[in-house]
Length: 198
Image (cartoon, rainbow, N blue to C red; front, side, top):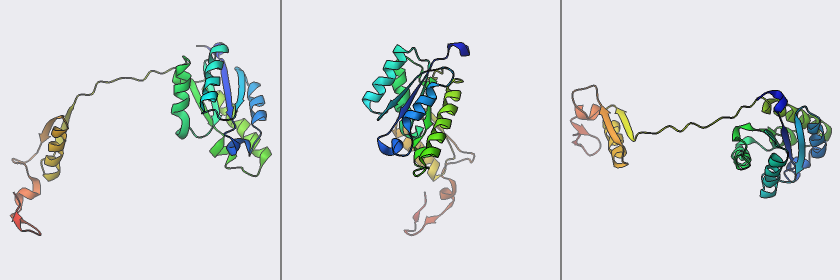
């Protein structure tokens, strides 16, 4: 896809007062709308909630978006939510980018409204630039054989092999010595019971 075909949608989340209490979300959204290739910019109270996700899906379809930037909380919290959201709207989930304006901006600049707003605008601008470079990806599916190799036939290796076999795996146990048992096989008795070690 060439750059002329890019259609980016930006969705700025207020996160209740978590973000909106420290910066001007509408100003951030208005600024995002001026960026090249951004065709819509929307403010939501809670973008991760069902109404916010529905709005993203609606704009993807109505505006024919092929990139989405969600300016909200940390990707560690809701990246799977938004990837699933854009996927349900027919967009490859890897064409979505998140701008963390909660932890990195709002929470870091609680008492500096103007600086927080400016930093949020910069963060969104960077995320839009990154989103424009994203390419669709497909997750590879690789068949997994239920077969394992356990190296070492000491007590730990033998127990691991037994546990894996009980779990349904075919087990290959490899030991460099002539017999299994490791150090335990070389001992006569074990402390504290003084039982035979073998």
